[in-house]
Image (cartoon, rainbow, N blue to C red; front, side, top):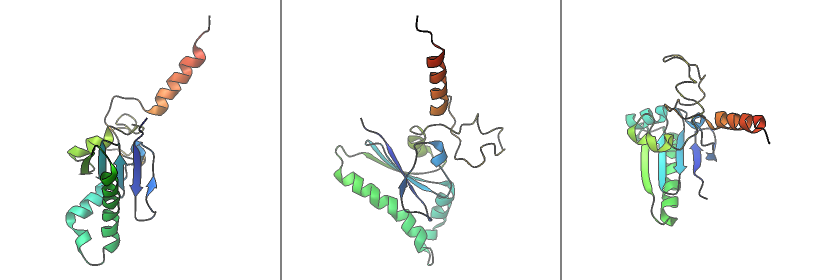
Length: 153
């Protein structure tokens, strides 16, 4: 069975695997998603704004340039050895291509759990995913309740 992997790239730490969960989406993080059929580089909101402003091309922003290049190099390594060649997508938070990432994540923070629009009900715990699906945690709680409450007659 193929399991997708999600790697997080930040200024503070080396690349590390993170949960396939909506709490992994943060404004100052770059994510690399490998689903075997898709290789996706996702820029958080702040990183995307800096990239569009061209900070990586200015002197004194070498760390930011290296942060942007790290997932691209890792993605190229994955693309070289893979057959069939996966679809390569580079996207920003809030962009139309971000749907490839959002469709694979566990929606632990949704529009229903964030509180009312315009409030910070989630407390900065990741991006809200607009979905009618329940999170894995809610599903497991309902499954446990059904298993414990079921009679064996």
